[in-house]
Image (cartoon, rainbow, N blue to C red; front, side, top):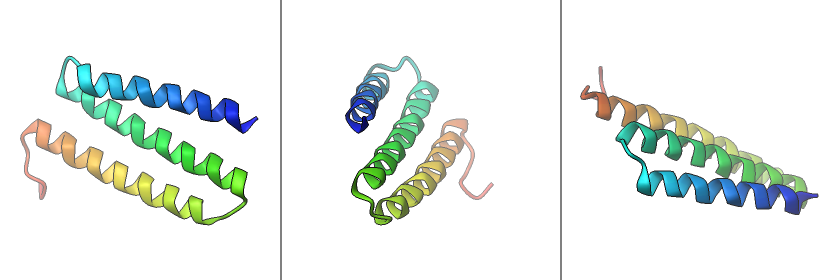
Length: 85
């Protein structure tokens, strides 16, 4: 059952990487980077279910927070504002 989820997430990763590489604009690439972070959190969650170890959830939580902060910083940069605004 988990192999089905892994295959689906791999397809999502490749589609996000395609959008990052060929995206028509910077906001499209930013959204693709954010979605890629969410997909990686999904990989960590499925890995946690498969191995029955809680460490993967800690990694997933940290990755989600860093992805969110990075997306906000990139959006502010694209808007032309400083990081302390």
